[in-house]
Length: 66
Length: 295
Image 1 (cartoon, one colour):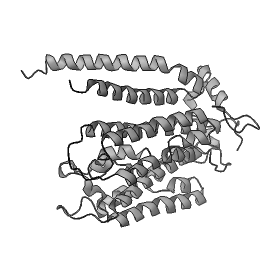
Image 2 (cartoon, one colour):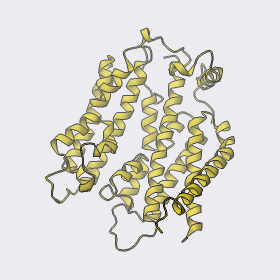
Image 3 (cartoon, chains in turn brown, green):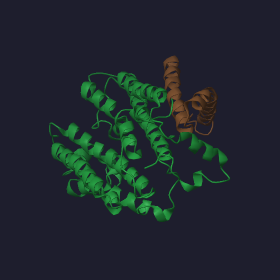
Image 4 (cartoon, each protein chain N blue to C red):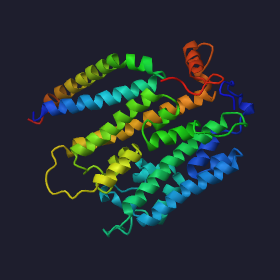
C-alpha cells in the first residue's frame, strides 16, 4: 500500500475538522463542545475502522474477482 | 424586537412559513412580499436577480455546458449552487440549457459569470431562510447584522464570520481555521487542479460553499494547465470539497443561535417534557443590556 502514512495523516486532519464542526453543530456552547471532542474523535475513528474492516472483508470474500 | 420576548403564537405571525419559503425560493423577495415586507422584498429581488442575470450575461449562459455530455439531464444542475434560486435555474435551463450540443469556446469571463450565478443561489437561500424566520415571529421587528439570514450569509461568505458577529470568537477562529485550512490543503495537494468548475462541476459546488476563501483560491491558483501527473489530485479535490461542505454546518449553527436569540424556535424544541431544550434556549437568549454571548 503506497504512502499509507500520508493517507492516514490526511485522513486524521479531515476527520478532526469533521468531528469538530459536528460537535459545534450539536453543542451551542463552546465548553461542552470542546470537552466532547476526544470522545467524538474516538467514536469517529473506531466507526471508520470498523467500516474499513468490513469493506476489506467484503473485498476479499464476496467481491473477490480472483 | 425584544431579544427575550416569548415565541409568538401562530395567530400573531405574519404568514405561513412554508408558503413564504416556497415563494422566496422561486422568486427572490417574493416570500417577504407575501409577508408584507416590501422593502426587503424589493432589495432582495434586485440584488439576487441582478447577480444572476449579470452572471448569465458574463458567461453567455454557458455555465451548464461545463457538464460532461454523459452527465447532462433535466435534473443534472439540481446539485449546483444555482438551485438556491429555483426561478433563475429554470430560466437558465429553458433559455440556454446545455448549449447547441457541440463544443464551442467559452467567453473570457465565463468563470466570473458562473461564480455570480452560484453566489446568487446561495444568497437567495439565506434570503429565503430569513423569510421563513420572519413568518414565524411577530409582525413588529426590523433587521440587523444579527438577523438569522444575515449571519448565515456572512458565515457562507467568510467561514467563521457569522460566529464572530454573534460574539462567539473562539468558535469563529476554529471554524475559520478548519474550513479554510481544508480548502488550502486540498488545493495545495491538487496543485490548483481542483479549482475549476469546468473540470469538476459538482466538486466545485462543494468548494464554493467555502465562500470568499474558495473564490480567492480559484482566482490566485485556479485553472492551471495540467502538464503532468498530480499524485494527490483526487485526494486534494475531495478534501477541499469537504472543507466547503462543512461550512453548511457552520451556517446552520449560526442560524439556529440567531433564531433562539430572537426568541423564535420550532415549537417541538421547547416543551414541558423537554426541560434540557428549554434550558438550552434560555442560556442562549440575550439578557437586557447584554450584547453578546461569551465564547
